[in-house]
Length: 196
Image (tube, rainbow, N blue to C red; front, side):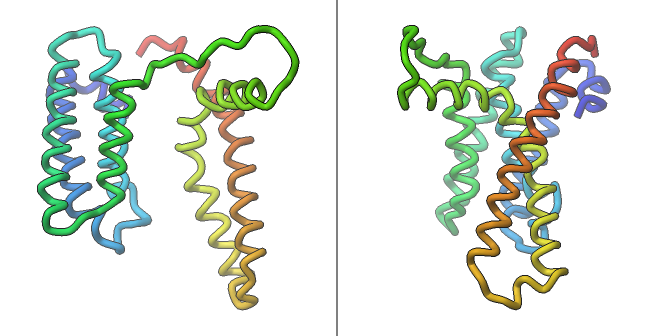
């Protein structure tokens, strides 16, 4: 993505290109089971997230307006295509992008100093996990593939045990959280200091 961002003199060309790829991903690749293991299947959701970020945070007003317009246009395309066959994944991706656009930079409520009640612990956990969530999003699929490979290759699926599958899913969550923490501290934070 960084190479693409450097390659284009303005974001407008890149935004149009990504939007076209996103619509093709949402309307074709996302609806075919044979593409579920490939990046192109998820590109529509990724692009909607990037458009929401650009629409909310980019300094150039023209880019913000274009990104907002394309979010609306992609929403209309998803709505029209849902008349033929509703795909919850596409509708969810668009609503998440809309929520990010509207409330993506909302801050957490401040808590007065005091004891450790459940609300304080919950809000601290959210505040810790929020900046690491994108890293977890990037890394979790690799752990899912690893758990699936272990489940099949070691013959665990032959036992037809739900507890083994749930245990592997919990390991995926744990590994994703730990890896996301390190990815955030060792890659994302230092990358903000780079002038690309």
